[in-house]
Length: 217
Image (spheres, helix red, strand yellow):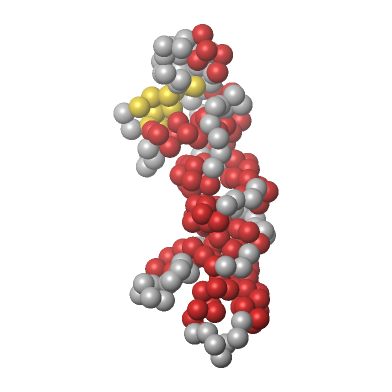
């Protein structure tokens, strides 16, 4: 795909004619993506199971945007020029799951596990982790930095003064693995233990809670 885009710089990647070796058409809304079947079938088992193997066959994708599909295609393209980020994971994971791409979802999981992120990225990391957790076929074992982000996401600062509703909090954890729910509770407990060094006689208990969740780790 990339070779064709280099030789046809005036054409948009995945447009008709951009890649002379494209032999499959992915249809998403009003947009058509002309792609190589071999690449897509390797990445997306649902596409591989399609009975129509004719050259130029169309495969329709419903319920997802063309932009999301393009981003996912760039991620699975060996030469795709797109950087993986937590925001991108949150965006494309549902589509990857729809297409049966467990390997791509696992790749996203490893990306969150193996990379360190700044504190300002906590909401993005947490959103990606919650989205992935619900799609992973095996129980994940999140690293501490991901659990910290997830806890801060469901209990933002200052959650108690913003009238955070319990049902809003549970919306994030609904559908995740039971082991992840347990891990989140255990992670909060460890943070509260860390906060024990604060003098509760001199500080409001809620301030200690907030500090434990948002200042440590």
